[in-house]
Length: 150
Image 1 (cartoon, rainbow, N blue to C red):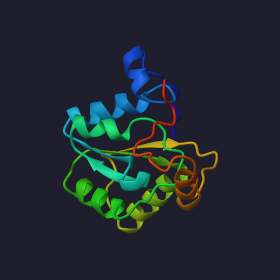
Image 2 (image 1 turned 90 degrees about the vertical axis):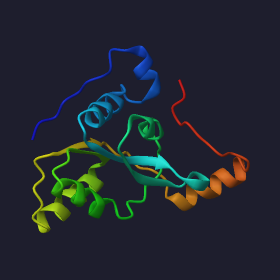
Image 3 (image 1 turned 180 degrees about the vertical axis):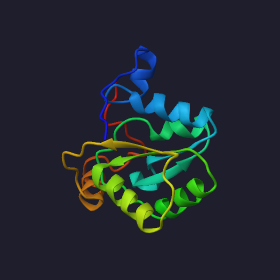
Image 4 (image 1 turned 120 degrees about the vertical axis):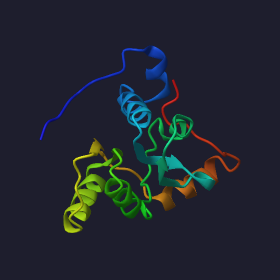
């Protein structure tokens, strides 16, 4: 296993992302090379869930940190289908989500040579219920959020 540290040199790109904006660089490169990206987005009522993204326009919703547990839904099944179709895939999630994905793919004997995992170091996040209760109490009219606005 190898671990790298990096950041985007372009200040405009760093303003789009968080933690050095490496994810916008990786995800854009993946899409431009015909791949697909799986990452967290805010859904309706600020629920955080995983989304499958195939174009650069869709990537915008995946940028910046969420700080709330995200729902995987059928992400692993969809990602498996992409790998079986020989698409390159970038998956960005917590270490536990990435470990779960690796285990799922291993059990299903799916070739993961085209999979790039971007694992986020998780320091603890609130449950979706706690987050929703807080947002309704503190910001009842809020429809969008950026937790790391620059």
